[in-house]
Image (spheres, rainbow over the protein chains, first blue to last red):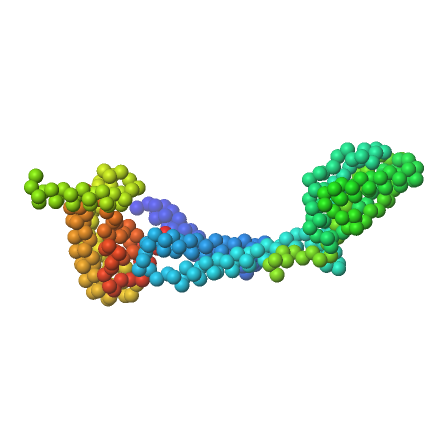
Length: 234
Length: 134
């Protein structure tokens, strides 16, 4: 027999065995760290609790369906089914709490240092020299108005500006009229006058004689001192 | 028609009329058809109760109990199911609720068979390996 016929398969076999014996590239600490990172955070925890709640709820629903149809009468799953229903409720609540903590994190910039919560709206826009809005987000104004009606402890700072064209006196007067317009809109939607702190600030900061739509607005900043995220869950 | 035949006819008619609700969800003919099918199946496959009992009791307790008590119980259940199958065939024209649950031996394998709501003692209490209840 030709020697090559022996050597070549032998070499292939040796190479294959060598490849098999090569250790697999494992990095358990790195993978563990990756998994831990993926599971970290309130959002992931909320999802995990929700998944468990769904599983438990499915178990409880299944047992209930069996009981109603009188199926599997011989299977003793009463305690298991009741536990599943209870655990489903517990995990659902835990999920809601984690989700609430996540939401608090997400809008943490809205929380002021004293614990109250603040939000800014710019929902009313004016044309050059006019105190009549050419565009207003009626829906947002309505939501804010009804929110103020429902939460008497909330106050709003209404700050009205003009652009930098014109005299200081005329701009001051214009910003006062703009602020009054927005105040009236909020009152019309349920807010009380004592909740509204109107500030007519005249010309906005910026180079003189510059027409700028960004300056012809009225901004509203809400302050809610007693606000607490998901207060029902705590 | 003599009195005996008249009496039989009356009994049959009243049985058909009074138990009509049992086939309320389906037509009379399809009800009779399904009862015949069930009777045929139970008459011929009643013997499957033997492995069913052995498997489920072995899983619930242990292999020894499964082979002894499960076998004995399986034989009893086989006789029961086969007999019920024959009764279903005979009474197919008379609408009625199922005499046996599960109606077929291969349905809900972990559920112990019951006859008219009654069961043989010594049943298992956990899901078997062939059916987890889903």
